[in-house]
Length: 90
Image 1 (cartoon, rainbow, N blue to C red):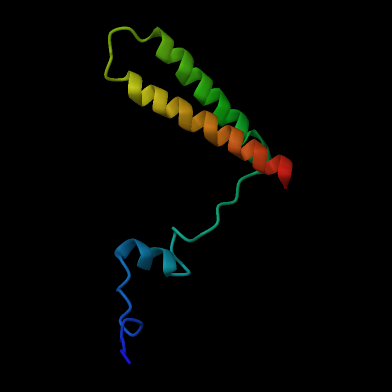
Image 2: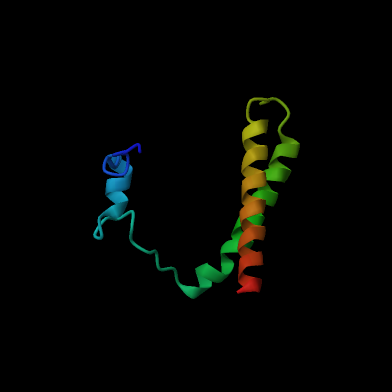
């Protein structure tokens, strides 16, 4: 029979994991938003995504900005739709 001591050797926590494990860490605190901001959050994400999309249409000389703008557009629209979907379900 083969005995292994792999379970006895737990890896050390990284600095970021140690920071989130502490109960009084700023990374582990819950954020409280006023209801107005909380309700407007998906609309803000969608508006920011649409604004970035329309701004991308008008950029002609700065080709290096286009991929970043399109990525920001996709991320904002995705997060806005995701938050709206989660709220409707719950």
